[in-house]
Image (cartoon, rainbow, N blue to C red):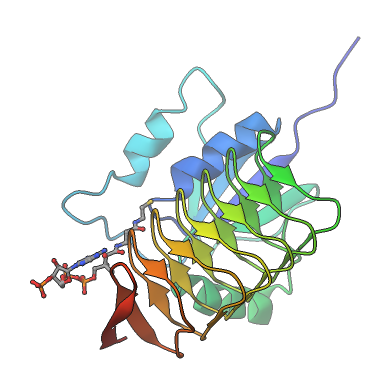
Length: 225
Ligand SMILES: CC(C)(COP(=O)(O)OP(=O)(O)OC[C@H]1O[C@@H](n2cnc3c(N)ncnc32)[C@H](O)[C@@H]1OP(=O)(O)O)[C@@H](O)C(=O)NCCC(=O)NCCS
């Protein structure tokens, strides 16, 4: 008996989250087949280079092919996902839309729980052990890292990212391009403006305007971004 070939995941752009994308692809029986770079790699001093992240896949799957956007052509049976984080995601998606008009895959780790009453946009990611509550509605290309909880009826705008262990209360409205950093907590029924950031470990107890960073417990204005 011959099994069907695994579906091929193509990831546009690389960043530190790409290992989570590889991990989640493998957990879903997908082959991380290609990484398509839109910019030359710019790994910081403490970043792990893409080559090392790919080398770590040895023994689990064939190494993904790395190519540039200039040579990329869509192929049959491919699934697409964005690899960089906010705000680069939005720029890259616009470029890809202009060139190829692709539809994107939504990748959910098998250990995550997504309520059947929740909605996920295209190109979304939900990491291991995260919980998306009933009535939650996530826009396109929202990145939910590991161990996050999204409360009932909370809406999250496109290109936002929710980092590990963050907890978002119910019935909130989170804008587009928002970052909720590691371990942050948001009380319920809040409005978080577009492009805002709730810093690591902060507890947001009131609304946050567009484009500002709030830090601390309770979270206070730190600076405009
Ligand atoms: C928001 C963040 C980037 C810090 O912003 P920053 O402007 O670079 O902060 P700096 O390091 O310049 O520090 C500015 C001040 O805020 C303080 N500070 C920084 N982060 C803080 C935090 N999360 N909570 C409280 N205070 C914080 C610093 O101690 C410093 O205080 P000072 O003015 O008294 O010296 C950081 O808190 C954060 O949330 N990082 C994201 C972490 C994350 O989610 N990573 C993903 C993991 S997968």
